Length: 164
Image 1 (cartoon, helix red, strand yellow):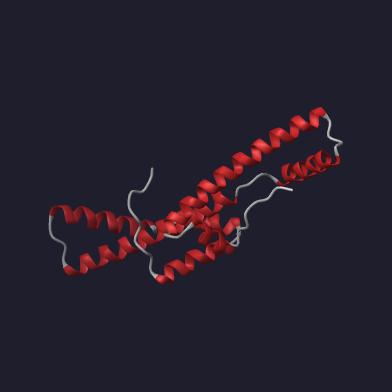
Image 2: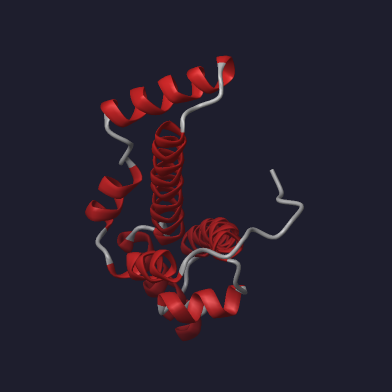
């Protein structure tokens, strides 16, 4: 689904927190990607939303509802950021990268057999598909952050991929 409008800017503290996610390990990002409101918060928000359908909420209830909505929004943004970083980190496995480098070296040395040439072509196809998928996820993350792809890649310390 494509967004038809620009997303609103996030508060500076949230932007800073999200920017720091690129430094986190995959294990920590997986934990963040699974965070939810507590059961109590979920129940309170559902109850307040139900009540708001049948009667106007009191000021204290409105304040509590807004605080829970704000907490929920922050959880969603964190989860989305973590998930997109995890997706963009997925590349080809190190063994495939190593094999690609070996075959490419043989190609340059003109010692590549026909079978190895076919294997190299399959690896190149796999790498290109992984790069396209990675780019798609980077574009989604850039859109989420309201920034350009180049700026995002600079923020995340990502260099453009050049396969040896």
